[in-house]
Length: 272
Image (cartoon, helix red, strand yellow):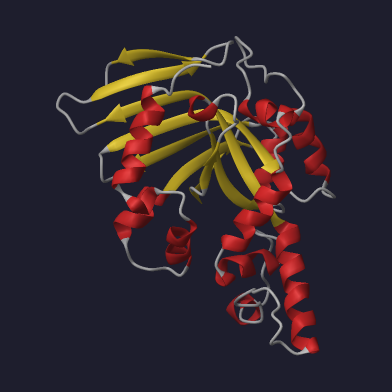
């Protein structure tokens, strides 16, 4: 495989210099508790756009960067970006219908922008029908695009028998109790006739049962834990094109990176 690309090297540097941008889960807990560090929130969050099944209407929302995943054969040359979602959200239907997405990630500390286009995958629990579609992707040797069939990091991990359910559980366990509780609510975007008063009835936190809990409390906690985990899914993005701009220097510099059919990155500098 190719060496690590400029955009990934630059992103690694930006994340290392600004801990609020890293994949350390403790950072996310701080954001999930709504701490008021604007720079931290700006670094960790990116905007993800998808297209609805009609093919006409784009939809964008903020996501929290959770981690990178690499295959052992390709390493950092073919990174996967990991975030999370509720399996019941409209974006899941959008992505399963058309998996091509783009994210925009502004790192304020280094004055850099990364626009990453790629193929998105949803990793829910195995009993969910969406999981069958994901398994098909892991078993494909490549994912076709309009002009080429670049090597898929997802497929490489499939060959290596990567344990996606273990990864899903690992990420779920590192979420704050308040964040896990969000997956116990009614379907996101559905009507809320009771308004705020109805919302006050929802669980505020979800934690794993402990030996100190009574039998009744253990049962209550386990029920909420299972419900949250059932609705919890990983959203994994396999980059295909990256537009990287740095505004640290004047004039600004910009590079367009495209993954070719051999799974290597072609780079061209363009006008910023």
